[in-house]
Length: 531
Image (cartoon, rainbow, N blue to C red; front, side):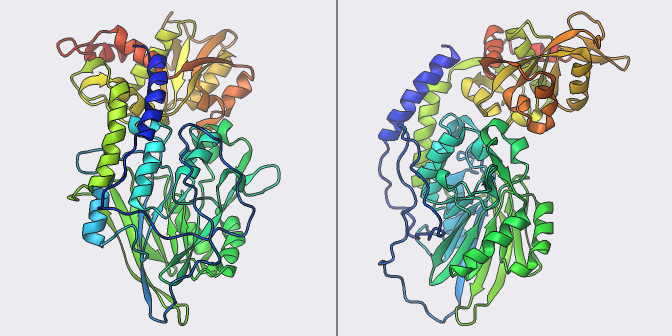
């Protein structure tokens, strides 16, 4: 069965699977905290699609009674993850979302309706293995809703499925998705029409918690630039100096800043804005795991893929407004008892994936490690085999997201390795231009040429690249749009040909065509590509 036929079938099955969702039992209840949105224009309605569930965060009701505030200090516990990347099943047995929630319940004493806990994500929630990517993150949104997340920041990979789908995911999430530094390029306005807010105010046991999101300024280079062409991502300090006073003016007693930002950036930012009285800075993007204090604030990041989390405990005194850091730390996702409600959701989506993507297309006796020479050779040589008019193929290593484990190779494996919805572009360029591209691509995956006597030589002819000749180069559309510092591609050929070929398809076809089995694995063929 061919890939595009499977794609159409799985979309149909995904809709049926969503409509067939069953109610949860009793172990986990729905979150009860209601966030107050900032005083800005409300976002427009998201696109209507068959997968939208219309569970947008409710607006505050001025007539709703609140619990009477007390003068006793309140303890607030922050549980923080980031770069979940759809790994609800876990990268290894016992390390998924169900087990993590089990640890939160058993070790932290957490339940989603306990207002003394705040669950935050530092972004990059959806793009990853097939169980999430194949459904544009819908399955992951459902899992995080049930876990009780209170807010998430916009990561660069939240744009991978396009702005329309970002809007749909935002509407399906029971928690706000935040970015204070994402702005429309034409007017510097916040993208509230997409449902992206700069901050929210969350009531926690009589304490008003301000949560402000930040998105990495590298986003135009680390997602498909075409998806964010209308936006700029202003520097973090400028955004915070604008937004923090607004949140404080609306009554925030404590300020938390979950950001899709690496540790070294957080360190500098915490120092630069130490006068703003921000109590927590959360990280993301670099997949780091740490928790510490700096300049009177907590800096933390939770690792990645649900394998761990970071935590911080504060005591807030409503009498005098003081906030004290009680403890900080990190915890590995090990030994937790899977929570049945989360596991049921995961199993439901896993069954849908298996029904459509569990088709075996090959066999390997040894694992093909992520970004290994074998994986690089597999992808780029498959492109050239599927599009033989091209001379060279280059793809960035960042697009290779997981290994192919030893054993049967399935369609799901390829989607997991190559989760982004990219297509192949054919670029026409001179030998001089190709040499300039190859200089940039030294650390990426390359096929069709090799180095010999300090020169680039074509595999097909053994000839050195002629600076004055014309050549055909295959890349993915993320790179052509300028991702990973490849602006030279569009500059070299502004009218490159969009082949409309899904970048996974030649890889799938190549594996199928080699008819590998347990007794005739694909390993020797891959090794031969490296010779």
